[in-house]
Image (cartoon, rainbow, N blue to C red; front, side):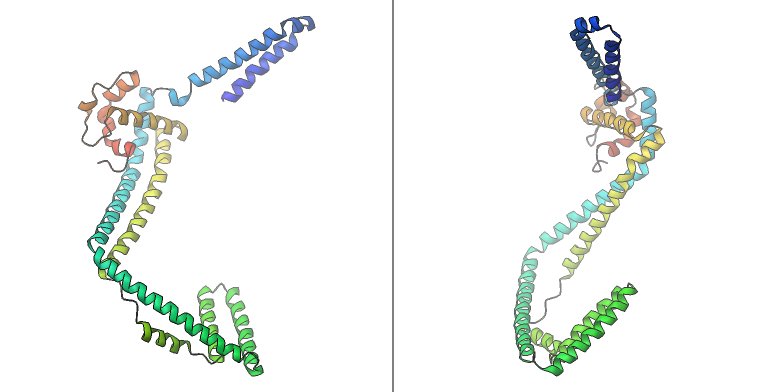
Length: 306
């Protein structure tokens, strides 16, 4: 809108200069240029003066905003509940971790020792098996059996991919690796038993740790629920208010700024506490209509409010 008004002002000034006689154009060219600049500046000032963000809310606009806030309310309450649930779960998980910190350090120490042992022994056995295969790499019978297994695997994989059977493909890949190991004279199961015998098994997680991880997953789910509800709030409010979404967001922002500036957004504050905060006509309207604003205070200032 601002650009189009500016363009019209400049075009009008240019047309006036074209309509003048050649002599007038030469004599008054500089004056007309200054006039065009002044007209353009005036348009810019007018647009800035009527920027919707700077226009106080009228009583009608305020009533429309209240309709929107009421329509927001179910979604805002859902978002607030999800937010608080996520906070509660995260704090609970953290407290659980802190109350078992010594036990957790010991559990991590034992787990790390087993994992490191299994990794090292697995690498050692893998190297041994590789050396065994290299010794047999010139065996024509071995090569032929591996080639046959590879062709069969390729055919089976293509058929499974054509059917988008990812589960079947995963099973086929595991079976193929097992066949190749058998052809090469390796027993992967025996290696796994040997690793477990030497290193032991990773200790199972304690019950409190399983509970903590479940709480963290639930907190992530609650955060996702919050984001979903929060994303729908402004749209629902704008539709109910009859305003376009930009104008509704601007009106909502003006009320939010007053709620915060007046102190009404703080926990425990009441309308009596903001009775003297009305200076402009808009602020005085907010003070008068404060009881109508209170039900939407949490939606306006944040999800940690009552």
